[in-house]
Image 1 (cartoon, rainbow, N blue to C red):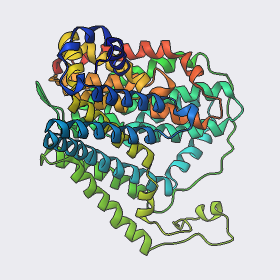
Image 2: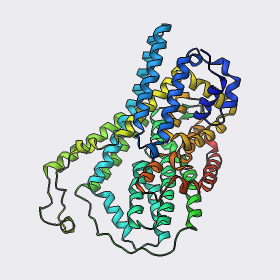
Image 3: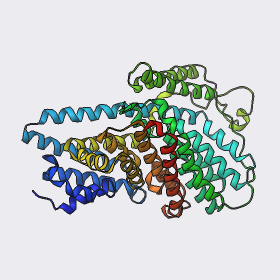
Image 4: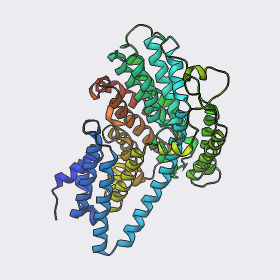
Length: 482
């Protein structure tokens, strides 16, 4: 069955903008299934799922649902084609490889989310919110405090958790000041995405790249390589922040939050989290074993400490205000004993299932042959630098996770500098539009119309300027890595 060339152009244009023209010249070189109706149907299924994901804000349909069914449909088509052509063994081997890659990433994210939930249960984030609110800051002071806090928290807590935490502070501290909420939320989204770009634990996409065990043309992309992106990421945050600073309202906030005290063990859980990260780095960088083994070992630290907290539980007394008891010098717990498996159950399963759908869908398109074709067009014909810049711009529309998964499926032979450029581009490119990152989508959903797609769009030109400024800084400062 022949599909019009226009449809094939449209498919690759949706995956990576401006790819359509170059693709037309190579249309006759598609692998067998990629030129078959089943291959086109698989590609159309993926694009439809991505469209539904992009419209999550309007449809209220969780993003995992379309991606899960897309993964099933794509591999069902691959299985049918493989059975009819006698290649079922290769298809089974490929899907198992995709499952293995997802399992490693999922377990890594699961441990990180569990630690974040544990810190939340110990009132760490409530303490931070109260501490910031009671500083008596001006609007501009709060704007910079929240932005810098988000930028510095993202490398450890991931960009989504950091944006939700600090964004919640902005939304409750001045609920009727629409102008400040809009600018503050934009600043938080930009800071979260920029801060998440220079640490393997700052964003799911950087975590994906790190755990992939990439051997570039000039050395391995290890844990410390990502920190070369600190200054470029900082530039990507500071330029929009400085521009928005001029538009902020004047005035000073009045302290109105009761002081909050962290629950017993909070600081020790922070140290255990850093220990878990250090263990993952040790397993990956020194022992040359998958980082997920070290991270799951780090989860056991929290399990043993949780057992200690449970056995020495000091509950809040019934009938006495929390604030009164927490103000006492004697450390106390919550009303229920700490249970690490409750924290595991509270992880963001929609995100984990969404990543599963993306991993299996993109893996399926890679098996069919579309990713190899796109890789040849972008990285061989355009050049790695131009391709990575384009990938970053595409992440503003497609979301960063499927965009990065597409690049990893292509697996072009690039230098460490180019891989870092792809990481920086996908991370900061998601800030161009409010729908370009999970942080932006999440804050839009919580802001009650104060932070919208269009309010973010007004600042897109400045964010785009910062995007290219960050890339130029990377090309200059990290020239030795190329």
